Length: 393
Image 1 (cartoon, one colour):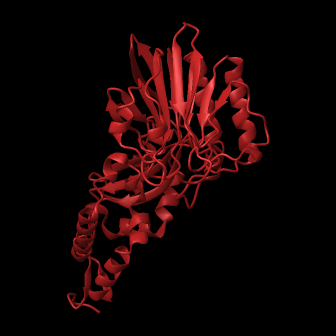
Image 2 (image 1 turned 60 degrees about the horizontal axis):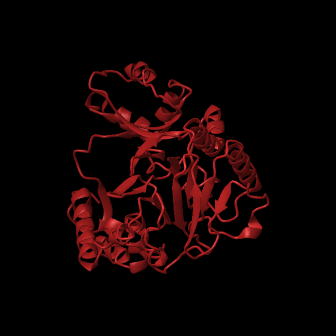
Image 3 (image 1 turned 45 degrees about the horizontal axis):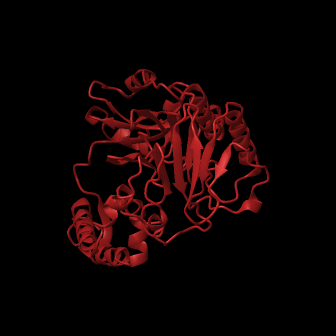
């Protein structure tokens, strides 16, 4: 038995944080989501999987554009032609509202379309009995403990749980609660960074298969799961159409600015790449390099030097300044900023990504909060000079 586990495709989502993209690279970004979905379907067909799991937030919003709906259903039709069923639920971004889908779901798609737990079954071509248990979001959040509705493992060869969420207010659970159900595999969704929470049984967030922000790099793609005896063994398959990458380039041997250009021409990538290039050991180029990086002119000039597969979206200098920057404000402003960060709403928003990790959620108590605020103040005082402790005004 073999299946594909994917989650958080976020079709319709655009790439974020990009201020200038070369014209030749724009088309790659426009078609990236569609290409990623095609790669997933190609993988399923090539690997001859028994079924595909789409574990929530397939769409970035709960009203997908008609263009996105059309190409999604066209790809699902390809799976139907290959006799590959798809088990699909909806997450907090694409919470289900039936009247917003203008095209019929192909018959090979088994939808979990209720905000209650249900189990669907199938028998593979080799005769293995499979049970798949899940639920969908019908609203942007679910505060209920949905894990309590999941039954224990049924009398089947393999029982799989599909679960989108992890922490309040997104269907919170504890890892021990998942393991206690006795399932053979938990297919999770919601966290965009790949994570394996357990290996007995495997409890896996595959992460988003296509990064849309600079924080979504080093992705593993989708998870291909295959049975070996009574065990389910996962491997990863990269399907991203465009990848984010950060690379450090040493300028230790660069004595003159013009020597930088042939060095950059040597940069290579194996796929279309949004590249953040960081210069290190820049002492020989001095302030001129810092000026050209800050002005944005060097970024534009170097973009003309790199491969067509590279969008050079950011340049930075790794070396820390010798002297702390001066801020013409009183130190009391730091205390005012700290008070702002102590506001529960602002603090929660800033750490929302950490909160989404079920393993970290329980650690983020009041003590953690106070320690974080204290470290923030300490870092600000270390990083800047203020009026009163500086020689200039």
